[in-house]
Image (cartoon, rainbow, N blue to C red):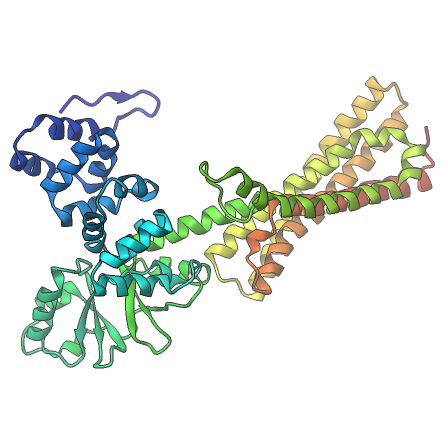
Length: 473
């Protein structure tokens, strides 16, 4: 193994990559047993990464050497590249490999293939594997059942300790999620969970039900992922049982599934903050990207036209004091920035916590106070800097210069406080009416805040500078 080089940027040793080592083993070792023995010390994910560096013939040799079960473990890490490698195989061979995978991984692989290829491979699989795959596919993508696996150990309620251990041994060959064992009655109805450690140290004379945690958390397969995923994450368990509406055990969702679901939800929320309907991908077709973005842009176009029409209502103000137009973008940009910051904070809080009505009000008031404090600081800075700019660069009188800058400072303060309120209250309202708060996206909030800022700015100019102070150019 070559000496690890230092990562000069971070100051840590560079983490070792194994792809080249693996390729060298596969290409240079002529004996099958030598290849199998050496590869046994490497992680399946590293072997999956190395497949790209092999020729199709070398890959086929590798599959033959490792056997179906090992190759199925490797294929679980292929992700979006699965189609390329499955297409190289004969349908019967591909069916054997996918059949040996966990049902949820098999669903992911089949989902990467074209429909005809997927149907052909499923037809060649055994009935039990097809049944497990069809069960998962029966749930919509946004339901937690679509993410579960049928890889779990179940024990019959009323079993002795010895019988429970025998059931564990019999099922462990096919199901390796064994840290938690799930207890069901004769009809398959979920009763509770047993920790593997507790079962191992239990004595024969003990009652199995004394080891069962009947309050162990569970979810229903039809529940929406975004509504239950945070609660599941908080339990920090290796797996959580998934039940049907009759309280029968269907499968489990693992910690890895939960992590992937959280990542997907964050990705979708990030995309929605940008005004998209889903997270985009480099490989997504051009037309699909246009279709996703266009509806939001059309909505924002009409909102922008409305904002422009509101600006037109203040035409008389602008005609009397044209200088104020120069600073319109300052007010609009700061209002939009503050609103987007409040939106990001609010969505994160709503995602992590279940807020009561009092908690939601507290969040809104806190964001408004932050907006007020920042508005005061920036308002004072604007009063001084803009006043000096008008005085020096525009050669206006000191009274005129600081009257205008005072108006700008006051407008900035008002716009930032109101924008903080909008950026917080809108997603809270969406959450209350059962709409994903992430759809209160950055562009939408920015456009709303543009309207708020325009009305606040020109309203104060009209009231303070023109009507009260009588300033005109």
